Amino acid sequence: MAVYTSTSLKAELNERGWRLTPQRETILQIFQNLPEGNHLSAEDLYNLLQGQGQPISLSTIYRTLKLMARMGILRELELAEGHKHYEINQPAPHHHHHLICVRCNKTIEFKNDSILKTGTKTAQKEGYHLLDCQMIIHAICPTCQRSLLPI
Amino acid sequence: MAVYTSTSLKAELNERGWRLTPQRETILQIFQNLPEGNHLSAEDLYNLLQGQGQPISLSTIYRTLKLMARMGILRELELAEGHKHYEINQPAPHHHHHLICVRCNKTIEFKNDSILKTGTKTAQKEGYHLLDCQMIIHAICPTCQRSLLPI
DNA sequence: TACTTATTGAGAATAATCCTTATTAAGGGA
DNA sequence: TCCCTTAATAAGGATTATTCTCAATAAGTA
Ligand SMILES: [Mn+2]
Ligand SMILES: [Mn+2]
Ligand SMILES: [Zn+2]
Ligand SMILES: [Zn+2]
Image (tube, rainbow over all chains, first blue to last red; front, side, top):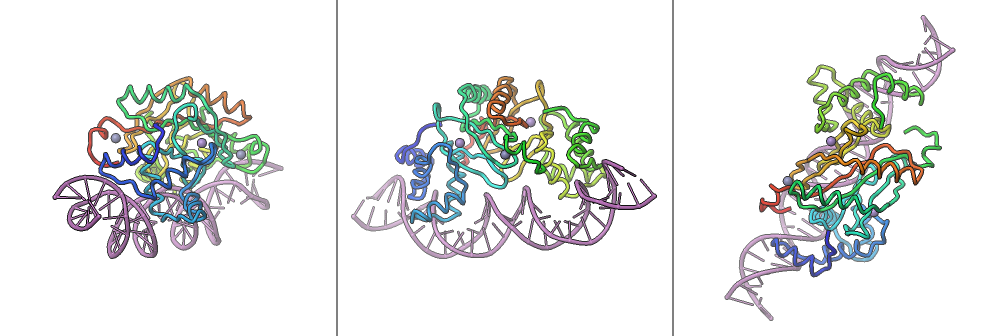
């Protein structure tokens, strides 16, 4: 859960025999500049880059998102049915969690320092190398509670 | 996060104009009798029922899993790439969380009472009706740390 | 028992994600 | 700076988990 720059990303990639490409640099920048509370799906990111005139193929998008999630640079979130969302993975005080309405997918972020502490301790105890730690609350929002629509 | 019986499931379904079917009863029983630490995918459940000589169509399996997750009876877990897993949703002292290796998907369950408390408090504060609350730790297990295989 | 309509089963449809392959270009060494 | 090795990209096809459609069935209710 480190804070990455182009330089530190390059270093970590090269260390493993991998390469820093303009595509990877671009995608890292997008997420670094994404305002807190925003989350991008693969297709969101694809469209965003198209709009900015620096298109990247969908294959590369998917490969890069997976790579960066497995490196601990991005967090992979299940905020809605059917597809994943991503955001930058940052330590406290930016580290946060998600409260999600299972009916309308409205999502609220919240912070709680003890969660990351518990995650760190648990991973360490088992000898795991921590990448990300998230609490997900599935619930029904006030609006959906009032609506009579089924499930 | 209540403990369900056939009777209480029927009551809750009927209250909403829905019905208790043998298929729903069977699926609830499967999960109630599933030993802690076991998690079933839709296909796992389908095959299990086939083997027990009480087959249920895959459509119904998917519909029922989603229904029960949205009722708070089952927990929907993202333990591996590509498909969901389910387990019964129970309060303390059975309530637990998951530490997952992102490379080999090895999963360890752990308990921590303060997590559910935080979840309950956070949902309540926002006026959400709590269904489930889970902490997910993504990490790399000791074995995968030693292996030189990339990502 | 009879009626209404939620639910099932079967298979087709959808869509997110992954895979294949030719081409490009990053990194490291001379 | 130029070369070589090979990792990475782009494009489109393939895969597959999940949803949808619809005719047939059966749960709930009076
Ligand atoms: Mn977020
Ligand atoms: Mn479990
Ligand atoms: Zn809602
Ligand atoms: Zn592992």
